[in-house]
Length: 470
Image 1 (cartoon, rainbow, N blue to C red):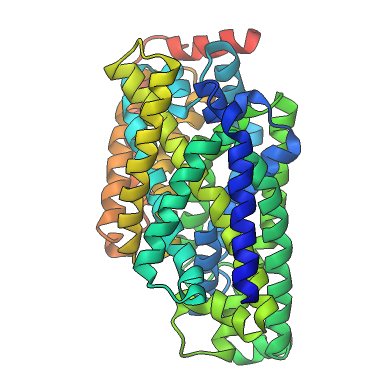
Image 2: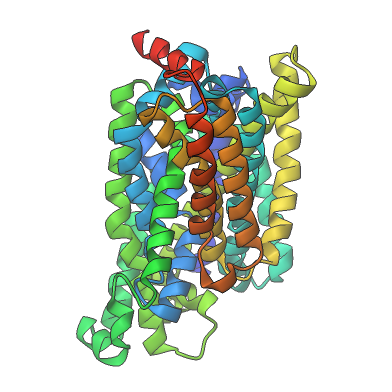
């Protein structure tokens, strides 16, 4: 009963914040998608932290730690922390320039300025695919908490949660999601920290963990270093083309607020990633015969109703802030870069918002259907990051090599992204992570096509230079 009261109260608070934000969110598409450029450093950091952690990532972190230890669990989150630092020092200036000079509110819009309309179309599919995969993990993750707690069939509660996500996204927009993120971040960080400390103590402390579990459980690199590196690099590089990051950059008050917020989010993630991992490892000792997907919740429940309630609130906080934001990002991309760019260029603000609402509803249902059949929550997220990473590689090369033009960028992203997606959906043949073949093919296509370009500075790079001057 305690857990139910805590969660229902938290859900009500989330709904209230969304309703308060509704009037502002419906003023324009810019208000709906990027909060009208009103986010300060703390809001940016909280929004990104809640996106990076996510409930599915937290549950998946504990699940993977239960199965294989630290190296199997933390690198999805640590890779994103590295991605935050990488963004600040490489592409943050590019995205802010695209927003200020050319009014970009989505990644495909920014890429279109740099690489042309062909890349914009390609980016729509890459962004939509990656974020639908990421969203697909959210409702099933929440259902693993709420289903047993409320005594409701897991499939039914999954669809009820999906409906809630859709309503929150449509009513509050990005402004609602960003302010919800501030509260959620505090609840997540301290809630999971309390449960983590309690879990380790309950099994006898860190010395017992080390004595009872295999030595490789405490290895950061793990028994398969190449896969660990691929997961870390793929996730970090994919952040160069992360709509979560660019939404924060586009919606921040200034370049300084954006950089500080992104950097702070990365710092918060580093210690947090260890917390659910230690819960999963403690569960391996305390209850070795349980399903690993339930390790986080069952371990917290074994500590008592208050611990279970705190953990449930923390996970719900992560999911409640992440899922609506992912739906908004997908709707922004499909509205601005498909509906307006290809179908109805003269669409009014109201028509664009209505189309966004439809996209949110359809994506919410489709993504949940995909997630119900997912084999591994965390592996799905890692796969999405590695599919997306190729476009980040191309952008990074283009900013360092002004000769990269629209043709070389388009074919590099298409070929590299297609190989990464194929590798992911076929189960990583030969045990090779999607990052490696995707990046190899992308670079192999990019270099010769760029060398064929006779202009030393491409048209897109010149537009970027013009934006920096302004």
